[in-house]
Image (cartoon, rainbow, N blue to C red; front, side):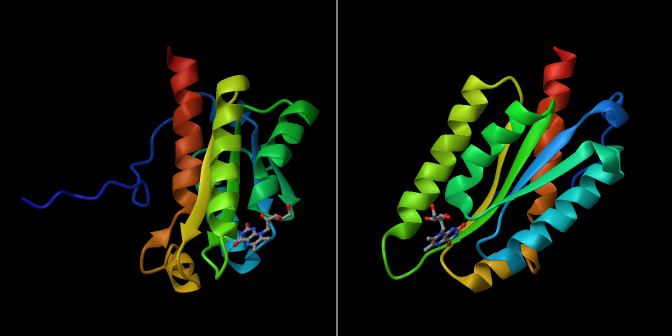
Length: 162
Ligand code: DLZ
């Protein structure tokens, strides 16, 4: 039996009670910006479709994925938010930068989740090639920006239903 892959690209819209009152921060890496712009666009569209108000979406840019946790921490301190989505794209190169940046980014975001009251979502592509990133930001593998948005709303809903 083949196992069905599970992702949120084709999510079933769900009702987030009082979606219009939630404020979402999105921190976006400028590195590989043609990929991160595309993830941001679709994440924002998914939030709006789910009832989040345009004026309640706060977007901030940081230089690279390594700065995503710091950017998210600043945003949480600056403005009241119910959730944060970190968007980045890390591509394997000739050197070991990939593993250091990817590990630090994931670890930093996890630390925020454990230390802050709001969910902080890891919406970071970690790809071997640019083609893989393009496939996942509007290509044949869909657009993973949707997953970031829906994961954020699901974590907010979790907090508001228990
Ligand atoms: C330096 C660097 C490299 C080589 N590659 C990437 C990448 O593929 N994706 C990404 O988001 N950022 C990259 N960066 C930048 C680092 O994340 C960071 O911005 C710099 O090291 C400065 O701290």
